[in-house]
Length: 372
Image (tube, rainbow, N blue to C red):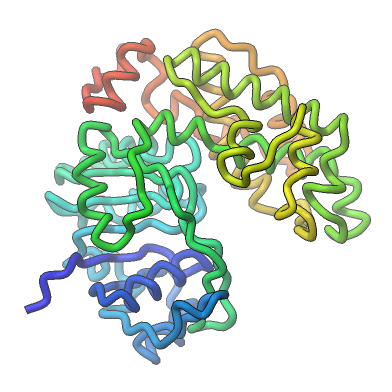
């Protein structure tokens, strides 16, 4: 009898295919769900995914238990539900899955960006989902991967340590115990405010894209995004955004990593300032810019990462003028109000909470009903 943990992967993009394939290769009963059947038609026909890794350590055909576009079917036997979709789709996934979730299931957002788990939980409450489900989020995605074809996946790298936190944090160790059967790389991320406020994509991606918009449009991204795009002046803007993020975290009693500390931790790279540190990072050389401004660095990272951080700052008395500037310029470029579309604290249902009440919610699950 197979007693291995049963996984369902939600989303069949680059990341979802890599995760489903790797879980299948490790021998876990794995279901792959995608909203549009066309994207998974080839995988369904083959019954799995062909996987290879850059170093050749992961190779072979990875058999999947089930491939489906039916959420009820996808969740029926799942123990761990791995959500690998753009964070802008988290609310939709929560809404679609709400009627079918069962007591004891665990949902992990890969990654949550900022306040992903809080948003997911709010949607489940709004949908009157009564199942006792544990929601967790990873700070970043564990794989660097891409799709080489409709039923192919290539893994370039698997990160060695990825912080993860449950909502509430007193369930984090339970989730880590579950996920460690497949992924020992996940470590305690303290709580979902800590994972969300250590979101470096919020600092680097939108500003670097917006401030180099002329270059992106004239070259279609044919320049080195981090090396050519981070000039001394652009680096000063990134430093201002980073200071605001760290100050927002501090207002909530959280010691967030600075961008310089993160570069040292992730890449063992340092410098006297952010400009120097970025240019000292060999891995950034050769990475091209986005080919267009219609890119997730704006349409995902602004509303799902930058807006919630800035919204928390505004609520708890932190000046977030640099963040607000980038959000407003991005909104003008895309003719979209990202403040309205984004994860603001009122949308997340936490706008009336004091710092103490918000901390009690993320750590212990105690949520006082919104006071009117």
